[in-house]
Amino acid sequence: MAKNFRDLSEREILALAVSLEETDGRIYADFAEGLKEDFPSSSRIFRDMETEESEHRRQLIEDYRRRFGEHIPLIRREDVSGFVHRRPVWLVRPLGLKAVRRQAEIMEMETRRFYQRAAQAVTDASTRKLLGDLAEAESKHISLAESLEEQHLTPAARSEEETAHKRLFLLQIIQPGLAGLMDGSVSTLAPVFAAAFATHRSHDAFLVGLAASVGAGISMGFAEVGSDDGSLTGRGKPLIRGVVCGLMTTAGGIGHTLPYLLPDFRTATAVAIIVVAIELLLISYIRNRYMDTPFLSAAFQVIVGGVLVFLAGILIGNS
Image (cartoon, rainbow, N blue to C red; front, side):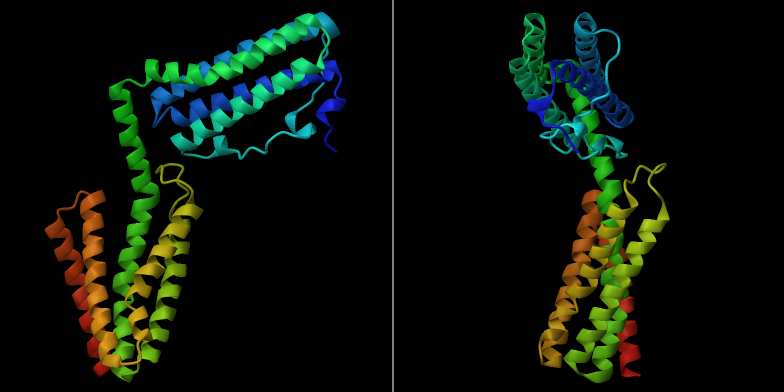
């Protein structure tokens, strides 16, 4: 059972403070380590933050020794009620820069509130002054982070980090999403239009298209999850990539399937063809926008493939 803060002795409050500074310092070290490859300037910021926490810990240990001796009991934040649950973002690889900075801000705010309450709970004048000074220091950490950003994040460094961030977004989101969208939009054309022209019934075409879209989404999702764990390629969590790829695959197939909710077969087919054209142009735009593929070249490749699959579906449906 977690202990209430009001029930802690002054010895336990100081021991908890030492533990908090040690934990926060190690988290900042993990941030620095996780960011050093893709965001080296921000990594140096968190190294400096780690140094600050180490100094706070040293001051707390000196005060504890003065009052209570050498043995410091192990009291962790999870042993005391009232602390915010922290998502272990520092364990994620690769680290997201925005998530790291947001987490650091939350940590500083929480630690500042702890020191403010701790200063009110102790009676020793020297300890109260130390805790008050540390609360003020935590309040200044945001300003420190801003000054460190000015020191380390030069315009060139910011440009470099923005480029790295875009590269990570491309690897983790755009690439699996585009692969899914292309597969869903193109591979489901044949079964949808084959069913439509074979039965001349919108409902049958819709059911076939829905089954093909969902099945393709599940298949592509699992294939993406199993492709690599992201540790060497920097493509991020396999589960996230699999979800993105699976959803975009399903969306690509559902797009030209939904028109077959219209009862009239000819009207539904005309609308579906228009949707297919929009899907192929959208894929061409994304390839041009994010993959640096010339638009005409991307459009030619995608449209030719889509038309061939479309014609195959019609020929099979009419056979």
